[in-house]
Length: 102
Image (cartoon, rainbow, N blue to C red; front, side, top):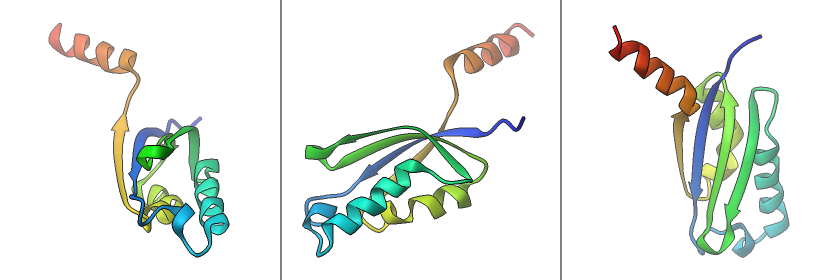
């Protein structure tokens, strides 16, 4: 079994680039829905939207940055996207304790 890296993604757009204000709102919302469904290279573990603030959040698993960028192109076209690698607290705390105990 391959262990994949986890990432937290934050997407921000504004009222001007909001899919609901586009010439094709159904198409753009459909593109965003396809992103949160993931693909063969990126597994979406969860996704959330703060619609009034025009912000979206996802936790994903992926092997590389190119796979993330390919999946998220519809989001990048609308605004900013921040991708942060994350780990479970237990993994990090165990590694920290092992490192400081010698």
